[in-house]
Length: 164
Image (cartoon, rainbow, N blue to C red; front, top):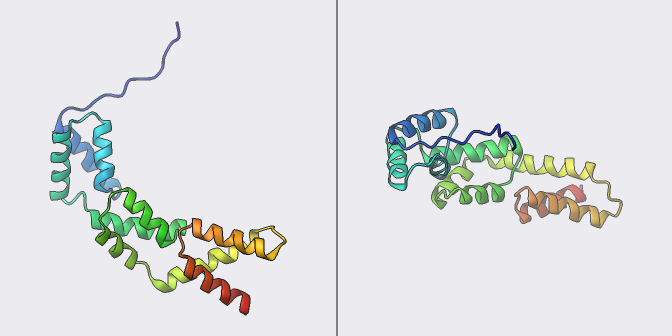
């Protein structure tokens, strides 16, 4: 017989306890409604209680989708140097409304965005070991697209880099 060290996760059935936990969780970092909903379901709360806790968190301003979207977009751009396309897709997976996604992406300064694209291109170009210039260019473009930068902006920056 094997000894198990794992404890079974305790389920929370009291909405007031769940509300208190979620207030602390949301105060620590901006959260979206879907993250809170998923967390509450994982704690074992029933659907009616989940929605009432979310409504209460919104009314107490612990949960704000607009604030979350702006913080998320700004953080992913500044820290991880993601492009707008990748940020948009991640916000969509969190069920953020399109209006708020556009508002969050508009908070990113265009000059900073282009500077980040140019820096990412430069770093990847210098790090790429491919000798064939065409293959190297395609690898760099593929990398930048995977980071969420727009194809037309990448092409514009590439033209500027290679014509200078």
